[in-house]
Every structure is written in structure tokens, then in C-alpha cells.
Picture 1: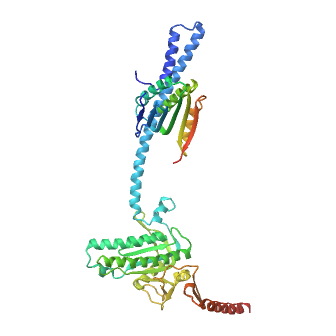
Picture 2 (picture 1 turned 180 degrees about the horizontal axis):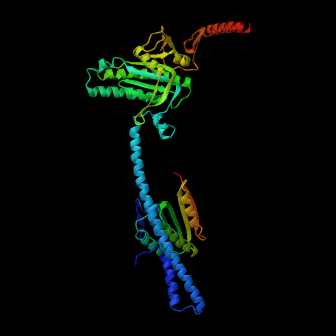
Picture 3 (picture 1 turned 90 degrees about the vertical axis):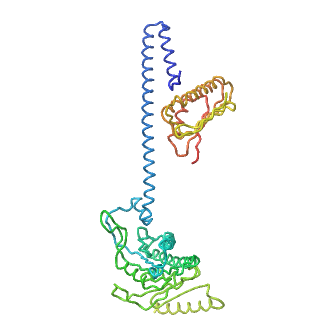
Length: 346
Length: 128
């Protein structure tokens, strides 16, 4: 006889039935009550058996559903992972966490915008085979994207060899902090580009890439532009155009910032101002500031300090002060302080 | 009695019955297609072992992640058999291990243990 999950209960029932069949209970009324109780017990055992069967069947179906659901989730995860490559990670996160809607909504926000491109890219690469061109450009864009993501930039788009990115949306650390992150990133991009040139030369590429970077800070419209069926998360506005124009005006291997960006980051980066220039599509003359410390190690705020406002410029680098330079600097600063106090107290 | 060792599958648990050391383990997930086919022989052998045991130290470890209703009935049978063995003078220790945070399995173990008065019951949390 095969095993029965309810064999213990069945054994009790069999024992009770045998007892009744043998008329072992002398009192007829007690025997009738006993039989009634046995019938109720049998019914309870049958009900439990049915309930367990039903429960097993339901659990089986739930398991199958869970399995199907898991498979669908895995498919969706793979799909969304593939799609995420076409979006800036911040945008992807924002949409998947439900913070952003896929609707045509834009807002005005102060952003720091960066454009980079490779000088004379077409001429530089015209002799390259398509496979070699794809290898070098993908390698270059991968390296630049990695740096951008490390600094928290939102990569808006790649336009051939050019990269458009910005700081301040969908995540912002504050206007000044966003500008600082952008300029620091730009410097690192140029440093990495220099290393890439060495590598490209070593790989036999005759005309390694020289990158130009333009940066501007200003109000932009940021959000989803396009149609309800096909939209791009991007930015538009004159501040964006100015960043693009600054990039075309920038020296190769350099970083050129607007005055709006310069005032936000002059404490941490050394700039050289050029004569104001006329830029295509911009009516006013534009003040431009080229980053000077591209080849220097990153600024150590405890050793270096820069202050620049109308009427006072102060640039402190403790590491450059030798001999009596510190004592002399202290006397000069005290003299300045003395004069400023005298002026404010009168 | 020869030991019984059954490897875990997607639907059935790992079973380790060592009749020399009196250590018994059921671990993993349990929702067999036919609970009688899987557990029938196990229960039969184990009941026979318990019937032959006297003054023995018996340790049974349940380490289940998921089980269906039929398995729950089998587990109740095992608990009952162990309790009877403990009542007959054997020293029985039942360990019910559950993954940390799995309150469902933990509570089921506690409910099964409510019927115990002679066997010792230990609830054990497994860090995941």
C-alpha cells in the first residue's frame, strides 16, 4: 500500500469503525453519539485533505506565475539595461525612480554647459579606414564619458566627435558647485586627452586628437523636447549657444570659459583673460577666460587661494613662497588691510 | 540502517538521515509533484527508526526556505513522531532554522513547536 499523507487519521478512523462494527460500545445511545462523532471526524479529515489539495494547486499556480514573472522581469531588466546606454544615467535613474515623467515638460534653470570637440576632426581622420576611425573615436568618447560620469555631468548628446554636457539637472549640488565640478572635469578631460595622444602616437596614428572645450553658465530651458512620441531630454537657450561658440574659439588642448563661469570658479582655477571677442550669433562682445593651470596638479585649497573682485586681486600659492617671501607677503597683506580699515572707518 | 542522502532539486529538499549519529536534516525548498512518493519512504523508515530507539539522543534539523501545504502536513507528522519519541524516553532536539527576515518560515516553526512538550525546540536564525 502506498504512503498516504493522512494515514494517521485513516488509522484512527479504521480503528473506530472496527470498534463500532464489533458492537464494542454496549450503551446504544453512547454508540450512536460515538458514530456521529466519527462521521464528523471523517468529514473533517476529508475537508482537510481537500483543502490541502486546493492549497497545493494554488501554490503550484502561484509558483508558475512567479516563475513567468521572474522571466519577464529578467527580460525587462536586460532590455532596460540596453536602453539605458542611450540615456544619461541621471535621466535613466530619474525616470526609473519615478521622479521624471516622459512628457513634454521643460523648466528654466541655471546650468553650466560644456561643449567639446576635436580640432579638424574630418581632416585628421580622412585617411583612416572606417574600422580604425571607429576604434579611435569610440575609445576617445568612452574615456571622456567615464570622466564626465565620475564628475556627475549629464551627457546630453554626442554629435560626431563633439560632446555636449551640462551640470545642474536633473541633479544639482548648487550653481557654484556645479560650475566647479564642470571646470575640474574639463581640466581632467584635457589631461586624459594628452595621455590618449601619446597612446595614439604609439599605435601609429599620425595625427592624434586635439580637443577644444568651451564652458558657459547661464539660464537654460531644460527638459523633454520633441514630440509626444519621440522626445529628447536636452537643453536650449542662448547660454547653450555661447558655450558652443566658446568651444570653436578655444585654442586646441585648452579650456575656454565665459565670464559667468569664471566668477563662479576663479577661487579654484587660474585663468587668463583675453580681449573680448565677437562670437557668431552673439551681439555683444564676449569676455573669455582660458584656464591657465591645465598642466598643474589639482589645486589644493589649503595651499592655494585666489580672490578676484573689482579693485582687488589676490593669488596665494604657499608652495611658491621661499625664503623671506612669506614674511614679505604678510607685511603687504597687513598694509592692504590697514588701508582698507582706514577707509571703512572714516 | 543505511544512511539516506538525497540531493536538493528545484522542488525537493536536501535530505540527510544518518542513523548512526542520529542526526537528521531536511533543507531547501519543498513542493514535490507527489508528496507521498517523495516523503512516504522517508517517513516510513524514520518512524521505524524511532520505534526502535530507546534512550537515544536524536537531533533533527529543519532548514527550509519554502514548502507547500502537503509538506506542512508531513512536517507535522514528523514533529508528532519526534514528540512521541521524546515522550518515550529519547532525548530529542528539533532545530528550526530560518533565514534572517523570513518571518513566515519562523512563525510556521513556532506554530509547529506549540504541540511539543517533551522534545526540545531551538529556533535558529541564519544570516543571509
